[in-house]
Length: 304
Image (cartoon, rainbow, N blue to C red; front, side, top):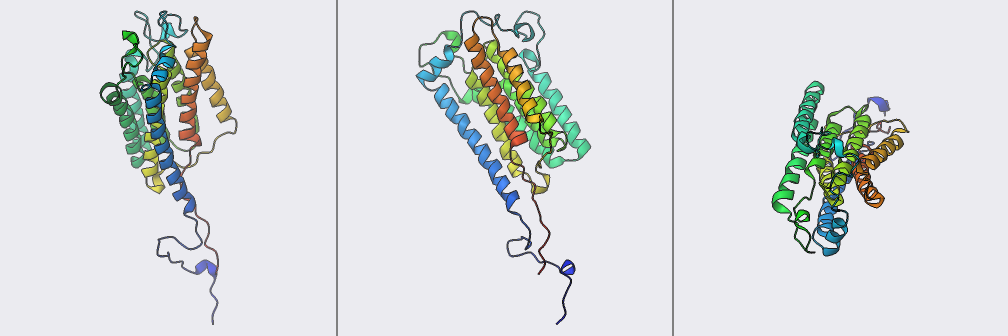
């Protein structure tokens, strides 16, 4: 009986298509975790709407954040486009659509250069579903019933926020098409942008905390479900990042949220706006950078 060198033995897949001695479990587990994460975000989105918009105590709590002072006491007022002939930081005011178009062009360009067609399609899907869903939900599907006899200026449907959906969708779309080496930095930049935008639209009384959180949850759900449906070879893999980057990204986002959400008339309201914006940024970071990758891992076949 002759002995064969284990390194030359051909290993046949089993009936499930898995090669003996390999580990396909982690990839499948991570894919499931991504999909579960997406479903959890959708559940959170629905729960947030039901509690903050469809209950009297939720409406009272958020309506109490608005005063007759309007947007002027907001620190970011001069850069929000609210003041007459004032510049607006993208995507505030009328810069939302131009910002979206430029972002889409950049993502298409990156997709073409890297030839990552599946990821590019997923990124486009995340952006379009996030923005389209936000507009449809806010204007057509999710009403804001007046349960507390609020002032006429407070009963307009605004859940979720379309302006917040722009940086959230673009940042998560960019995370899908960029290389693993620079993905953490792109995510950190998008995280800061989202924090500033979410805080600014609250401080200028354009949106409530539930509006900005709802838009972020919708974007995160779209990203998780899209990444979970990608073929394993094209799914976003684990990205190496400096150990200090998460702390730096969180600190910068907190600072941005505090400045953009600050108002001269109330420290309490300012902190509420900043906290909601920081939570949005944290959700984006976990989804894109801390969220589970599902690139399959293989080990060498075991001899014998």
